[in-house]
Image (cartoon, rainbow, N blue to C red; front, side):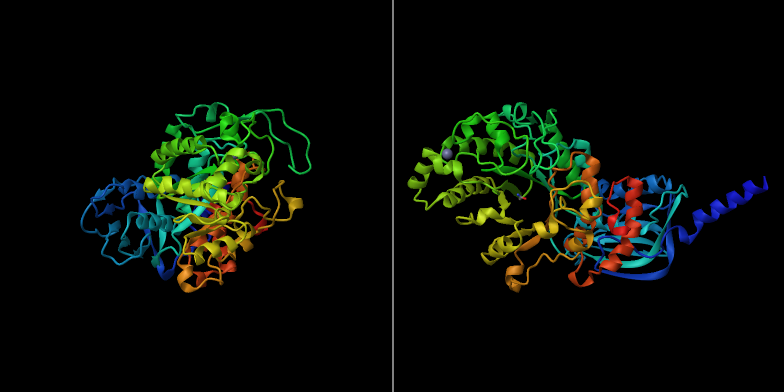
Length: 537
Ligand code: ACM
Ligand code: ZN
């Protein structure tokens, strides 16, 4: 009996002890400025949550807060209410376009009298809520209250393109996982989800006009086992999957509620064997073609000579544009060997008819035609840095992946750029000694290396630097067959990248980041994110 009482006391002390979590502020990505005071404000089930605006979307902002209060501390919040004025001891959410707060930024004040969150745009409020959540204890407890340290925070992002990519073609990822992926992105203040939907190894988006793209193109008959370079073994098991247009709408809407824009990628003219297998007339030889069962770069690509290729792509893009409201549409453009164009009389005739110098200019012609079409629909294209070869389409943005040279060249030509060099931003690379890690495609990008990345190359002038929209982490899934494996490769490295694209350059400090990550990884544990622990050991 006595023993039991001591146990209860000890447990009680543990639950309320300040040692169970840090009262300091451990926000990732690090805010622009923080002033901390002594003391806390406590949120309970009696704390009014008030907002001051009539625009739709308040649920997008309050939902993460209400869910967090309930799931972490057992707090059933009062119904959120509208009021033009704050109340004592409330959480007051104020949208104020005249506040002078930068786009996507926010100001958060935690005082003994209550919490005030202010922003000039709704996404600023959303990010302020993400910060507020990270100021609460990173532990689950049914205390029915959550302490928030007294502080004044001013914050806004450094870059407007804060991207994470996901290849769902090499290995299909279920819709539910994609939604989770977007949730974790939002938690780290990422705002662009680059959804890589078409490939040699699988076409993953339903296109109503071309049903064979998913009937044939979404399934490969088997998959290479182990290293693509060394292995001769296949698993003998079909691999497939695709998103219906309803799935896509759900994903886009889910992301929008978290202020994440989904940028779809429809690959052309290379990396398109799944499309060619479905509709062989798209290739130079007419096939037959097969959905690829191993990884790499393949010589069979879309024919750049036939009009029917462009008619097909315009039809596909018509449906894509209806589904995705994003400003940018990614058209791929990378790794397109010119072998089949060199052999194809129709492609060669196109070169003559258009007065092109060579096959590189033919690729440029291809991309420019697609750009013209997408521009005519009020959108813009972005492509991998190969689209520079043979001349950049007039309004195209460039995603620099083969190092930074493509991005530098594009910015010097006054084209917008997203930096995503393989050296620092490829999350399919090893993050620790390969001997200790699951098999990966190669490379070596430990947490500290991605944290050290600077997206604005010193080769650019101040004026040219303005063309760097931001940076992005890429997640190619050749060697990631499961959701857990994707999480393992992405986290914690995406947290480091989040800080690269959000926080001021001057404030970056790896030691400080690692201290804050101690708290962040407690949240990962609660969410059951399967993050890699190598950097913490
Ligand atoms: C790429 O990694 N092929 C863009
Ligand atoms: Zn051809």
